[in-house]
Length: 182
Image 1 (cartoon, rainbow, N blue to C red):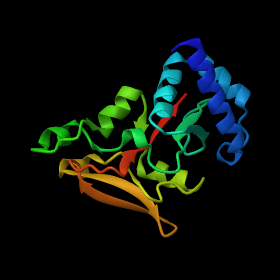
Image 2: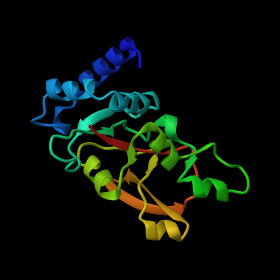
Image 3: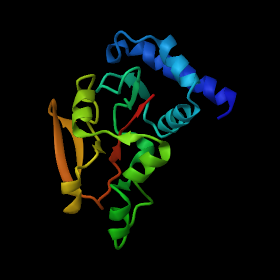
Image 4: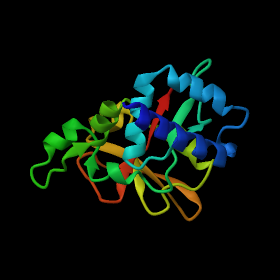
């Protein structure tokens, strides 16, 4: 990542951080920035999150571990650069026709991030209203995936819903949200 790209990303992240303090009370930008500057891989992942429309921000979703900061996609709707993706490689290969070009699990891995699980998705929804017109794939338990399904979530009627679908399905209004622990 070029120095100019890094500086632009840091400015964007700082601005978002300062506008949304309720997401990360008792955390200072100075500490976050210091951690990011010491971790080029995290900067690359955050750059990908930003480029695909995720609007990553520091959030308190779970315990990332001692001294860890958790970044999560906080775009109002599922990140637009990550839609039209089935759940994983197995689902992609199972499609006979009209295959999407990508899968959510593979795309997240390539970006160096994890899909949110149900608990994290629900915690994110306590910080704002997300996916009111879209939906997002979430990390699916192995027993559900073994039966051919995958889980996704959205927010409708003031409530968070978890649904299932065939893992090979894909939609223009369904992407995925990711998180990164730094």
